[in-house]
Amino acid sequence: RVPATRGPPPSLPDVLVYLMVFGIGSLSGGFVKLNALFPPIIAVAAASLRWFVASSASEMVLAALPVPVEKVPFLVAASLPALIFISGLLPIMGLAAAKPDGYDNRHPRLMKTAESLMPKYPLNFRLQSAHNNTIEMVAMAAPAFFVAHALGLNQLLFAKLSVLLLLVRLVYIPLYALDSDAARTTAFVMGAFSIFSIGFGAIFPSTVLTLFGIAAQA
Image 1: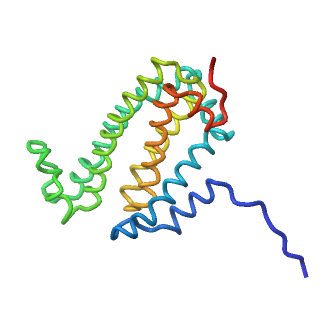
Image 2: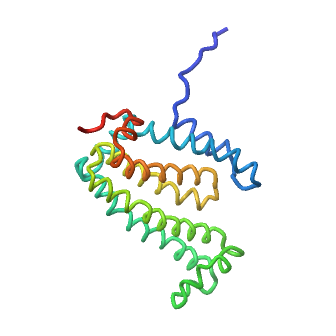
Image 3: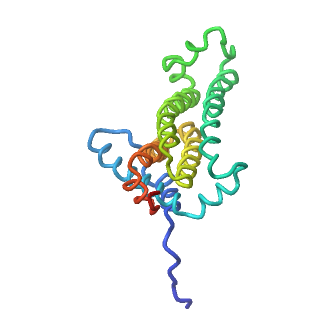
């Protein structure tokens, strides 16, 4: 008989994927369920943020980009409007393909209201909602990026947090489309924590940078 052996403990990404796919299915429910499930999502998002910053994965992502580290936040900032544009095209193309009479470009806002989309075209409603949330996220990120640039946030941390923000927002859209609301919320919280760390890391470097194991610049 071959003795049983223990493999290495699961990594944080493995745990995150398990929670997203097989764990918490939905946050929908009453007050007790929501407040019971939301704290673990916050904990997973915060731990994932810290893991990414400290891991070799973030270094590989930065190395694969076509710009030096100090330009990565600018690349991300320039990419966010493109993400808004692309995410806005998805529900338009979906409606053009799904509706018998196609897309009505004369009344685009009316076409994409909740009342028009939700009953018959729930997928397009979720894609439109993901687009709306992307716009809201960029509004959150803009002042944080300005603060970080103006006050001189640690360049490597700024680059890693900004690229993580872009990655989780790219994942957020298909998660919304697939109606995986717990996973989608986890991605949203990770993005929000990235934005908070970018802004407050520049204002309170001795506090925030320590959380990531990075010495504050003198």
